[in-house]
Length: 179
Image 1 (cartoon, rainbow, N blue to C red):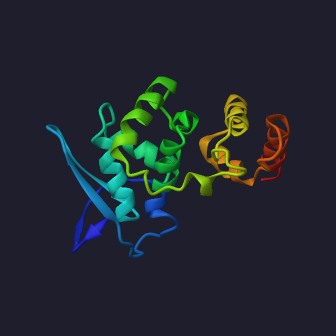
Image 2 (cartoon, one colour):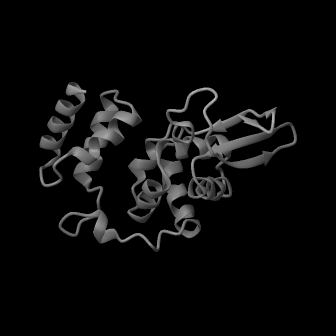
């Protein structure tokens, strides 16, 4: 990144840089992180992304690398939804986060992230949380089959939530095969 003729190296999530080309102007919201051995800039596409990152790294056991990995998988709304619905599986999609860590993060993030504004009814169908056990089964099955986080998060919203987990897994595999 170049600012006023000075080049800076930043760590950023894929959505911060998007489809920009070299020389194209973009606006990046940065967080300057200082350690004893390094000073690192982290870049984000919006103030909300940066605030959530800062909340994450203020959480016990979450450093900038893990915070950036979480932000690369989940945008602020998706993360708030996962915290509001206690979706351990969503956090397990982040590389390096296991079930134990995800559970601890959910507990800690509930008090740190402002999830009070999320209307859980709007995230649901028939009054059930958006990520039902059937969707969690689909996520686990696709992960077990070797599909990546990006593929899984892309296919989940396209599934018919009224079907059982077996039918949803078949739908997901058909969608992924067609892609």
